[in-house]
Length: 98
Image (cartoon, helix red, strand yellow):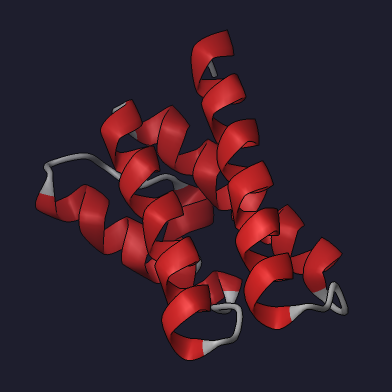
């Protein structure tokens, strides 16, 4: 993964943490979720363009805001895989496991 995408992923993880803290006011279970989100965002970055990383990260934040709960990493991977397929990119093994 290129350095600019790595920084973008880290920035989104910071934003997801902020939304989590704002909406849920708890970090219980968050470290495991964050690791999963990180791995998913990195996988999307390796498979596709940075715009798709943006869309996946935004969908995680929006889910937290609207459902007042964190999405499962499996659902995030499934959504990411669908998004990649719609845009004509091939998903890697990690995304296909969802």
